[in-house]
Image (cartoon, rainbow, N blue to C red):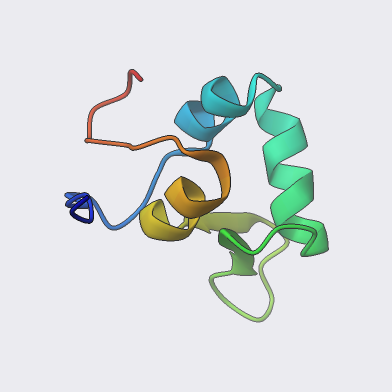
Length: 74
C-alpha cells in the first residue's frame, strides 16, 4: 500500500477536534501540555500570552488514521 499524499502543512484545530470527537478546547489543551506528538502549541513572540497551534498532518494520520485533504470539513 502506498503512502498517502499530504496536501497541507497544518490541520486546523477545529478539523482535528471533529476527527477526535472532542471539543476544540480539548485539542488546544492537549497541544499546550505536550500530551500528544502530532502537534505543538507555541507563542509567536516571547511576550505573547496567546498560543498558536501547529498540527502535523502526517503524524496526525499515523496516530489517528484521519487523512486531512484541505478545506474545513472532514
